[in-house]
Length: 141
Image (cartoon, rainbow, N blue to C red):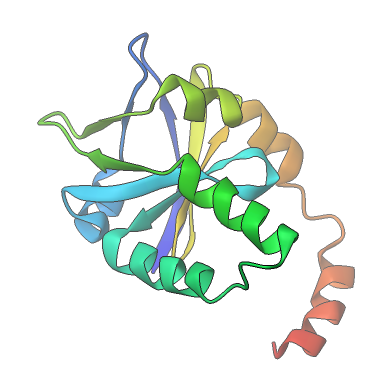
C-alpha cells in the first residue's frame, strides 16, 4: 500500500525523482497514466493488470465505458527508473496534469498520484471531512 506525501521538481527534460520508498514497492518498471481530478496515476505492474481486467469487463456497447477505458489506456506509458531514481514523464502527460516544475507525489493506497503542487494545495483541503465521513457509511466504511 502506498502512503505519504513527497515534494519534488520536474527538471527541464521532464524527469522526476520517484521517492525511494515508492520505488521499493513499484520496482524498476511501472505504469503512469492520466488520472482523475487533474493528476497522474501511477500503478505497480501487478495493480495495473488488475485495473486492466476491470476495464475489460466494461461493456463495449456503452459509450461512457468506451470513453472511460480510452481515457486511462490511450495515454498510459510504461516507465522505467534510471540510475538516479528518476522517470521521464512525456510532455502529453505533463500537460494533461498541468505539471511544470514543483509537484507532489501522494501515496493513496493501490496507486500514487502526481499533482502540480499548487493544484494539490487547492484540492487537499479537508474542511468538509465530517460531511464526507458521514457519506462513507453507505460505501461500507
